[in-house]
Image (cartoon, rainbow, N blue to C red; front, side, top):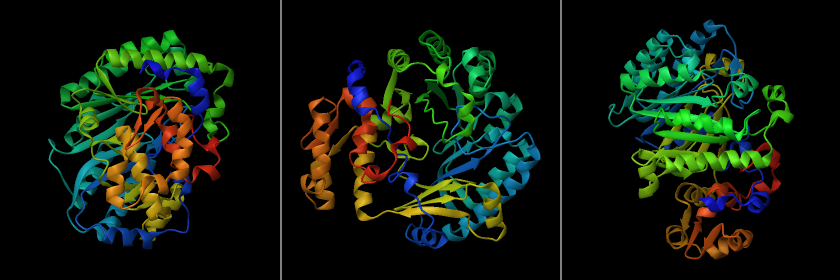
Length: 455
């Protein structure tokens, strides 16, 4: 991947673009969509296995870099009524899904899921088990995001006992200066202890999140962070680019722009990190994801079964996704739906015994075709043009004539090869979002400043 670090190419193609955890992106969801459309989509998916995402919005303190939907509070008593609403929402979904719907993948995210008390964690998992038939521990993928500052040994024991077998830890950076600048102070010793306890309890997979481009970050400081993270031997590592959008996210206004590393420094930090991860035996999955060669993600990347969902890359991304909780997004066949963001509105809808769907999107035939191309490029770094034509009975060069014309500069610059297959080259892989954006028919009319830069 050493050919990636061409500043001219990055300047030319590294502009802002969606991350394509969905196509169309959530910016296209609209309010002329509700429970009726969701119920119709569910009726067309009988007996489908499910991936369930549960959103826990609460955090005790704000991390200045964060762009997630969250409610910052130290009042833990707010969690119990929220968990009760989650159980009510699950009951409403169950009326459409039927009893004993199969569940193969579960993720609790946030916010901070470990904001919940141990009894609330048990209550929530019981509510899920009442509505779904879980795959056994060996075959199900059950993950939870953990804040090391709120993950005691007992909390980890409870999470493992109620069924979680994967742990996701937000590290971001271990440098004390950077941690103070982003308002997230957690020592290496603390995180190392959490990791050790998780391993001892039998969590079979550890995922670590890192962010490059944070305030006061330097090439040397982030190299030390990488060394410490590698000592955990996590199965998966995410290396995200910090998108500084203070006009959109209030907490980011507390970050001084002059403290952010210059573009050239960020590129050096990224290059060093990727080189270290590859040298340590990690496989580049795509975008910002890395995994050990024996991990299911790396295997899926090799055998062509890798998929994409709202949490990023997944070995089970082809599953329909049920999003539960405030702001959570569902994908049901060719339909997306999103719950109300505002906590009071979310709770009020459930108190009226209605699903809290606030907006959504029903994909057209054209949307479905473009989603297939974009997902193929993101997951496999290629699109088999001839196979696509055979499946959909169309001529690719005619249907996507304007898109192929826009790909031509990328082909000349060595980012893609175009023929019977569109192949993203090694040089183009870190810019694959820019390649995908060529097939995004909504992007022309969209303000790109709403999205993070590709690099």
